[in-house]
Amino acid sequence: MNIPVIVMVVTFIALLVMDVPIGICIGLATLWAVSAVGSVSAVDIVAPRLATGIDSFALLAIPFFILMGLLLGKGGIARRLIDFAEALVGRFTGGLAYVNTLGCMLVGAVSGSSVAAVTSIGGVMIPEMNRKGYDKNFNIALTSCAATTGLLIPPSNVMIVYALVTGTVSVAALFLAGIIPGIIVGLFLMGASAVISKKRGYGTGKIIPMKETIRRFFGALPGLLLIIVVMGGILSGIFTPTEAASIAVVYAFILAVFIYKEVKWKDLPGILIQCGITTSVVMLLIGASTGMSWFMASQNVPELISSGIVSISSNKIAILLMINVMLLFVGTFLDMTPAILIFTPIFLPIIEKLGINLVHFGIIIIANLCIGLCTPPVGTVLFVGVGVGHGKIHEVFKSLLPLFAVMIIALLLITYIPGVSLILPRLFGF
Image (tube, rainbow, N blue to C red; front, side):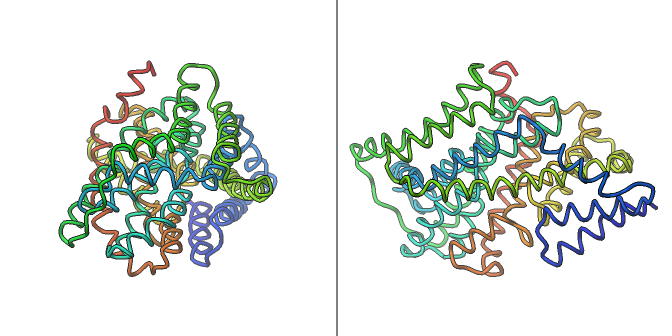
């Protein structure tokens, strides 16, 4: 019986139940677990791990992408993308549900943030859908689930974190690998929305004339070009992902301040402060999770879990299913960044033994944990969606169930058909 590991798990769960912030939960649990070893100073061991966990040039891209998302979120891009999405799919039965989903995909992809997508799209689309007779709980559930697609469609901060943990995976390859899976999840959510809308009789939106559709396309085009600038520059070798993030900030600044003119100079200090706060939270999570990962490795936890899973079954399909079930459970109480940092090293020995491509596995983890962002008790995106839509979690949960079902089907498709994730990286030589 490994007493320090038990101390860590019990401490973490106890702090989590007491509603202590997740980064503090991880840090304190690790600190007390190291103290339980008894032969070393916990602070002397944990503090350097926290510092070295964030001492990486690759992580510099994260604050830049956060700042880019804030500039775009306040710069009018969300409204223009909604208008463009409405012109494309708003005419169909349940059209506002499609507009909502496509808008979340576009904003999430451009901003790299599911929270930005749920706040910007939800703030506009949930009240509009309520007014047109759509069920409020369905509207909140759909917005929350659709917002997570932006973590699969690049640029995505969590992909940078996963690449950092593995040490061998290319960020550019991950960016490419997430495009098709992200689109698949979005299409599955649209399919579920179509069935629900037809069953409940949700109305058809207005048909947008071609001339207006073209106008809306050009209005949204500068924002959409951001993805091309980032991905094109990385794939062509002009700049690294970190350099791409800094260039994206400059592009977003010009777009928000000089082209759309919806961000004023007086707004910039507040945006920078918000970026600093968000970045500090993310870096605390990364540093604390790195410390916990180190401690578990020192206690041979990855090897024990790996051998435990293999002892149950040596079948590749069964092992991937068990990993997915474990991650689905983990995602209900652990945010995505610490989950990737803690559990990727645990599963890597199994994945490498099975010969599974690490890029493919990264997309499996991210697609899986996206579902966790919409599930209580710690579903970050769900809580934001409920707040934006002025709903209650216990009322929204029933509407989430059919959406969870299609997201899990999409996850299984991504898991067992590697080509879904790998076709684009291979096409570009990764």
